[in-house]
Length: 415
Image (cartoon, rainbow, N blue to C red):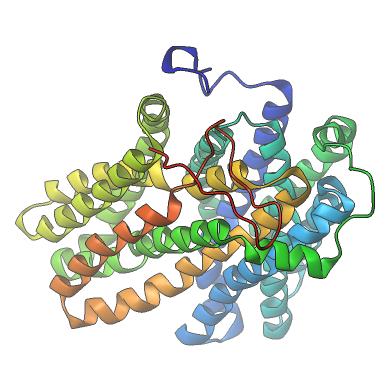
């Protein structure tokens, strides 16, 4: 592994990496232009109550979470690019239909199909990015920065068009996904070149692929660690505003918008320093630091009754913890997955999206019980990710993979 002085700056991308990150930017702009407004749209156009709206929005994440393994297995068998093309066509079609239909039932079905399209695009895109990344998987930090840019630009575009008309509103993500599809079609040869040639012999059967993936306890640990991180992270957009409402009343929306923008801007600014520091510290040290920053952030939010400044102090620590921990699961999967199983591994790793479903549900019960149990539980629960996200390596710096279901290699400690 290169020493700290030899690390290539994150912004110095190869042509293949620029191609993949450009596609990811279009993907994130499309996602954030529509999905943050999904609850509002469903409420206004379907007649569903709050539980029904929550179920539909949550089902989109659950479909992507539990369908990821299937999508990843297909990627490993037929290749990432063909399934990505099909998924992007599905995205364009679904958003195009959402712009046209007005009946409640078709709208609900179409929103659920967005989760299906995601299972077709995400595993393949991550597999290609993994093939284009260095040994540490630092490209997944760049991907996180790309998502932050989408998180700033997408809602601004979607918010401006939401009240214009459904046609204008849904045409935006359809356009971005169409551009992404055009990029994939035009650069098909370059993307196909990122996929390693298939080895001799028939590919593993679906049963072998599933069992082999589920049998990797290190992968299951990383997925569980990702659920823990997303569980805690999900509170920022769900329970923290409700806690603020009790303190600031009608001023909450403005204050929270300022916090959200500050978080997005700082997330971009902090990622380069975080990457530089991570080149000097071990993985475990970085994970502990990320968890500690989340804990400090929760303490600051808890103290916000003493003044608004505590909220903004908290968002600084929150963003540091987020910047360290959110890319970690993908980086760990990148390191542990063999080429022929990267799709299945990245697909299964999408199960961590379950944290976004469980987090607000549990957080609501805790906050109902009082701010003290809410902040104490969230501030300590995050440390469960520390032993789960540590990825073992052998003495050569590569991951110690078992050669058979019953044979394992004792891992060396990392960090």
